[in-house]
Length: 246
Image (tube, rainbow, N blue to C red; front, side):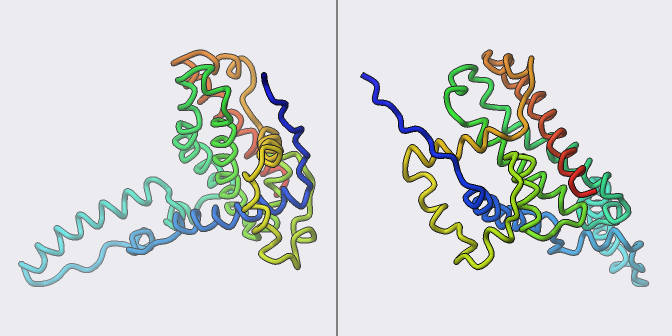
């Protein structure tokens, strides 16, 4: 005998804003690490080679170290990492393409991988959760590429694109202890009703279209279909963010 599950109570706009605002705090910390330059490698992409020493032995050591350092500097600049000379010369659209086309191409592999198990994994919300997190992080990076550093504005964008909600996070959360999310986060998975409601909002994100969605139910090829579908969904989500900020 199956016990009936409680009907999920929809999350309020304040609930969604609180969860997303809390998430932007973590995501911005991750993106700050990507932007950082603890060893000064990125900074050296803006300069030419250093002057060489007059002494032969020092010149040899400097040459060897300079070759290694030069390789690191060249690699950092060639990949277009945030904070390099190449990155500084890019337009916001080029920076968006770097996040979505290069970084997104790698992170989407993790989202699509559960598809190798076919319909078994489709019974679990694995791809929904991973896909939402992947899109949220990269869309936050895209927003920063267009100069949107304010977390409330980032929250509004994520709510609009991923949850199809129009919210004013600053108005909803200002004055609340801990932005009003500490209690919500601690209770998010405490009951079936709450968790199902959260998943309901996660499922509103841009996702795979047909035929890729259908093919994800097949073992082995499901991963490839999931990757293509998720890549397309990520591109559509980033385009939606750009339309909101430009």
